Length: 460
Image (tube, rainbow, N blue to C red; front, side):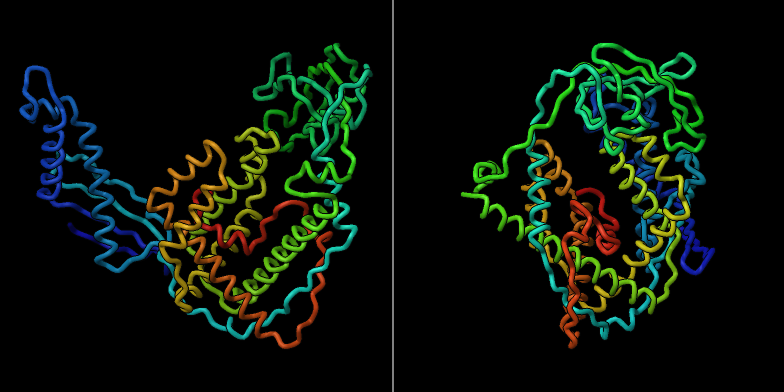
């Protein structure tokens, strides 16, 4: 193996690897010997098929497998022998791949993980928050629970009004032709702008049951849905039934239906604890991010381009997945996310820089995650999944590379927790940071600090 290393920039490396003929021959011989033992050709006993026939029938597949194996093996060997640590998987390009010729040459291009010492993070101080949850906060949470527990009841009205729940179908046409991915089979929808996209709530209002109506709507050229952008669209709409939401009374019977509660007072107490826990978690997340921002400010570092590119892809997928849950087609969701590339890149660069700094602090502090801790987290994740998801998670985390990605996530979480614990313990002022749960966004949220721990996570 002949290796040549180029240095296009401070962090980027381009490694060119040329394999000698004997190395190629050895791998091909090994591959064909294994194939001979496992394949049976008509007219030959098992293990007796001649090499020339194997090459005729399986040559392309064997050469492809061998080339892939050679690239992986010798790239790892070259990196190890030259003490090179890529921050993400190298991009391998084959320059000469004909295994029939005496030489194979390929290049591996990658960025190095920057080496630096994080300074100025041990003297930081933050106050411990004082969490306050008011009776009004509990009342609002109970009302949201009551709304989610409501049922739908069909009503005797013929015309759709805003706020109704309606069994309806939709399809969009432009120039007399149906627009791809615009057809919605009959389903129950709420006639509200926050729940229906493309202005369908306005188009659905006033529709009479049982009659298909055709209504037009023009969309601007920069509309986020490419199939609708710049078009005057004719929507075909049909409503079949109208429903109203029936809400249960907020009493002891309602509390018993929500779980192991004897009365409404017990449910209120449990709701208060949940709100306090959520507020505490959000306050800690803000404090961790504040600490991280200060540390980043004190430690300017160069971020590898390939790491930023990976984080851009991760952010695109995460944001697109959120839009998909709202009913947006996957391609349209990704296209919408990519509209503001400057913002996307800035967020990706911050997340990548945060991850590098947290990893460096973890190394300086000697923070590690044991195999038992990883196993416990995997068991928790699998147990929280339901049905098919539980099996999928178990299979996913059976692969070593996915367990290592989880270990990295846990290591970053542990490092951030230690930083926060130390900074709060060092604070002598005990300044109250009153945090009301009513100030927090509804439902589960993810701060940039939490984003840092998720960097590199493949699936969870």
